[in-house]
Every structure is written in structure tokens, then in C-alpha cells.
Length: 92
Image (cartoon, rainbow, N blue to C red; front, side):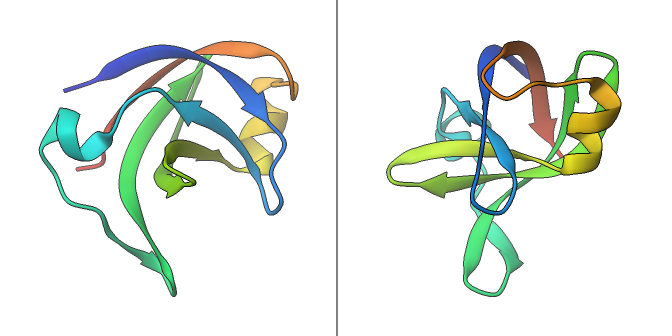
């Protein structure tokens, strides 16, 4: 069920994110789950470069975004505005 795509790291209000080019509900046949107060989304395991991490895909303005923690940005050497190969799958 792993999906791969290329996405640009975008600067976010609270944390950086990469736009996901598909609807996780349709592709994985799963429903969004509560993530924190007021936010639903999809818990995922993601890989960018050689860095594997747990995160979430959240809907915003009819699109979906993979949230990328500042620690992941730093450890993987990611730069806002650059594109990266991304692999995501639902978290176990």
C-alpha cells in the first residue's frame, strides 16, 4: 500500500509540509482519524531521502499535506522550496 511521489517542501505556519497528490481515503480505503483537538487526518509512516519517520497527512483547502517535523527537516537536510522523492504508507 506504499505510495511514492515527488513533492516540494513548503513552509508552513506551524511546521513544514509536502503536498500529497492523492486522497488517502480513496487510495487506501481508510477513514481519517482524530489526530489532535480539531484536526482529523491519516497517520502514516513516511520516508524522504534516508530518513524514515512517523507523521500525518492532513486535509487543508481541498488538498492533502504530509506534515514534516523540524527535526526531520534538519536530520534529512531538507530545504524549503526543493523537491524530494517521498514514500508514504498507512501507519500500522
